[in-house]
Image (tube, rainbow over all chains, first blue to last red; front, side):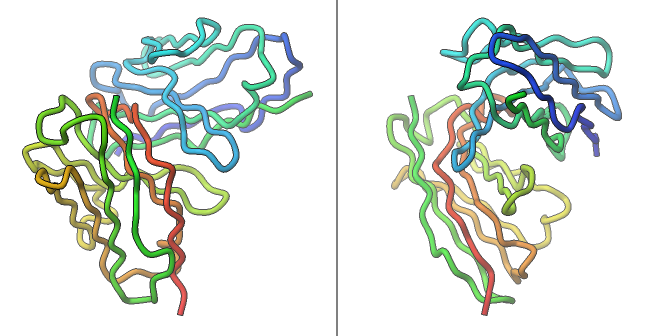
Length: 108
Length: 118
């Protein structure tokens, strides 16, 4: 089973700042099948990025994903008020599919 | 694009069976190019993948739940279902049904809170 470790646990930022979230995989993720989700309280998660770097439909361009080996990154440029949420990574390259534990982005 | 609506009881007794159904609208479950899945989230915790099923009925399960889980597709009613046997308090969670592109969950139901309690 691939373990995904997200860091930091909490990222405190001000609106307008940029931020970087990390997701490290314990093994190679096949075909870079890595997704990022945003979840707000009381809501279902929303798909932001799939295939490590492809934005899902309707996702603002300030969200971008990248990969270097087993290290995946979600970058958020110039945070908007609606971006404060919990972010999860998920790998779907190997069964069982697994999620990271989440990074909370809160207001500084 | 697909819309998903999960349904089922919100309270299940320990040792009994949890059964949930997800009704898909806006796409044919048998003809769409999606897979269908179940993901859960215990209160205040992270996400856990439960199982996936293709439109042809091919399924894949989380090994940690495999012995207790069954997923199925009902193309005539455009639904797919989850069955989890022998539940305990540890199975208390919000259960989401999802439409998957490869393995990324692009479409989500609202989630059904299932509490296991006597």
